[in-house]
Length: 286
Length: 286
Image (cartoon, rainbow over all chains, first blue to last red; front, top):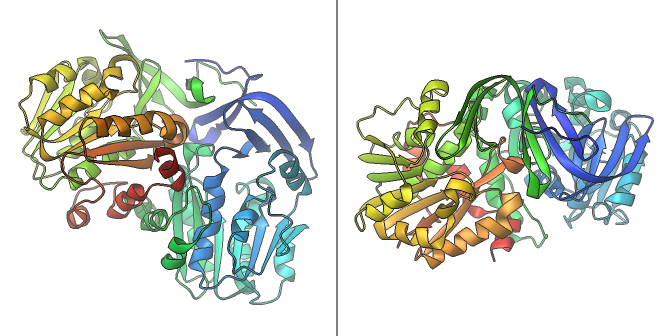
């Protein structure tokens, strides 16, 4: 056993699951209390820069490709022809960058409540913001729930809820009521995707409830896709897709094979494998 | 940031990768210095019992199914008709239990150098040893390298190297020379499988070298399969399969679908998905 000196390590304790993850840091680069949350950026020794919100690891240079590819590409390859995409949250702009790789996408609006997150990404995570000047991208700093309420009926193809955990500012994004409002603004055939926590820790709680809430909100088809994510609790994470009059258990496999995007994790086979679900997750959802 | 009190947490620091993982413990159940290694068992708050060798997490009740299913079933469903199986290491008996689920298997010999590991499993991980009295199982406590040298030419169908990391007692198990000796005792069509560390940390080092060593040892076909493993460094792990005159890039999909084993992680789709490899791993191996 060894103690971790808090001057040299950033440690996140997952209290309710009795585990902790730590990264060795060389320098604190930013410490801001925004109107919404406590934002820190560290230089780590081996994971590049690290962004932390309210004490929770959000992303590192080294492994954010996993989360960002898996929240974007399964949803976009599931929709038949995604043109109009909305991202609620996602202020680090990594999801936006992945969405913009799809040439058929005509407009992406990102609505994050906290501009400080995007400012921090611009300063310390330049690779994540490199598509922000794409003419198809619109960045808003506002309340995503209100934005959804103001949006027209059936106006969106893909809605991505790229939020923090269901505590703090993002709590309202994990409720049936909000999912119903999202359902309203999706076109028929529309796809919603939401980050949905750890397969190991949350299959029988948060994920199961989210799936049930999605169905209650009117989505006929729901699919949870697990994927590795070393810096998140348990090192294993998930997104959950929901389809409005469209199945999210199949996807455009030909397009997902034939593209020329420089992806690092997502493949057709990874998508199919994730859709199949480990039996213990299937049992938890039954 | 928070300090982890060493009376309440077991912490493993992955020094060369600047990360650490910790589990909250309620009690130390065992502390033995065997002839080969330092063996500890803890009761954790949320992961059940935890086994530690030389300071490295070996397994917990909660998530060992991932590793044990993935070191056993891909290899056994890849071999055309596995009857004679050998496990080098694997003293916790979890791999043995998975292998014995295959009804066609006629004999499994497990050779671990350290009987204390098996004694600890018998006391503190009863679910792992529940198949040890199967008449097809043979448990030996001896030097696995010597056992391989003494074995007859072309006498084994599947050889599983279920070792600790390539430092300490298991270092010799990661060398071309040992892999050549393994190749000798495998029948034509035989399959070797070895745990091969973290996709994120080791794709460009240990895994690439192991794949190259396997090819140098005479194996014509090599495949690395990644899978989640929360308690191992980076929460993401891998096994690497090698075929002697047989491809390890295909497997008996029908048998892998039609079985009635109560598995928690392994599925045909997970196997296929793992075989496809994330592009960043393919690039690291090229």
